[in-house]
Length: 459
Image (tube, rainbow, N blue to C red; front, top):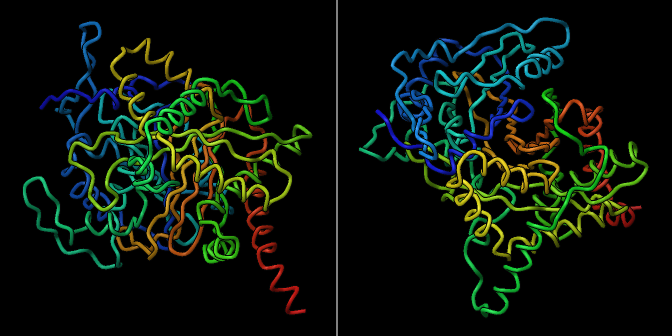
């Protein structure tokens, strides 16, 4: 079977470069060993058999400006995409990081479907699952739902799901996974606020906001800092132990902010600490944030694909105190929520996808170089999930950087905890572990300051 590749998906297919691959990296850790055969069979049934693109490879036309297409891989063998390895050494966390970082800069072979899955035994008493999925297959939120469809809400195998043509049962594994993802589709921003203009709003106000967004997207620039540079091929992924989500919720409740506000403010604080320690001064740092444009309560379509926008958020890392950063984070995020930015950037992305490979490259670089990288903050399942019978203990996922972007941030809430990880350019960011430490330090400061009036009264 052959089918054209959508213009937006074509952008990500064409943007693979040695210094920034268009690969979405995902990592799950499990408390117990994972049954290899069950994992393979479940992935085949719930992903490979359900989504054709997992059995297809991209083929480019010999005709100039003609769109590429997906073509069935006649020699498809799932064993070519599944890998198994045993981690060694006394430090399983370091062994896992070394394994990921040894593969994170490798391009996916173009002669087969653009994905691979690694089962890593020997992660303490359990295991880890490391997946690499090309952005041309789908956006990060859709692929999160795909990966969650391989999991269950219990250790025992799920009952087979009945499906009607073109629609998955809401009671089957995929429907359960979509429900488990909670509001994942909204990411940092409320979806309805991003794509629906607030009424009543006069034409002058809308035009003014549109002009303001256009100026922001075209005139913004990245400051010269220790987190900015020319991206090299080497990448480094780091992550931290979980942080209690209840403490983050408490800060939001006491300060009149949201969980997203608190977490993004913590990121701004981490950036501020890193810049002060390396540059002697801190400035605001722009980052891109994906916004899902699909309904959060529906499974992704069989064809998958990308349907999202990007907004440009300037982290208030130049401010001096945690509460000042939190207040300004809320103000800036509220401003974006009430602007037409997501609608405009979605139109820009679709337009870029129809310009041809060379023009795409220049346009993508132009907009990519406005930001340090991409930040995702995804509210994942609130209850524990199980993979091939083993309880999942953590989840992380990094979307690609493009152009010369050097800093990717993943914040993922799962089962009552916040998990944070950074994907950094090895040549530019020399101490990525410090970003992880500083993120947790900022969260602890926010928790302590939010509780301070209560503690003072108690004394």
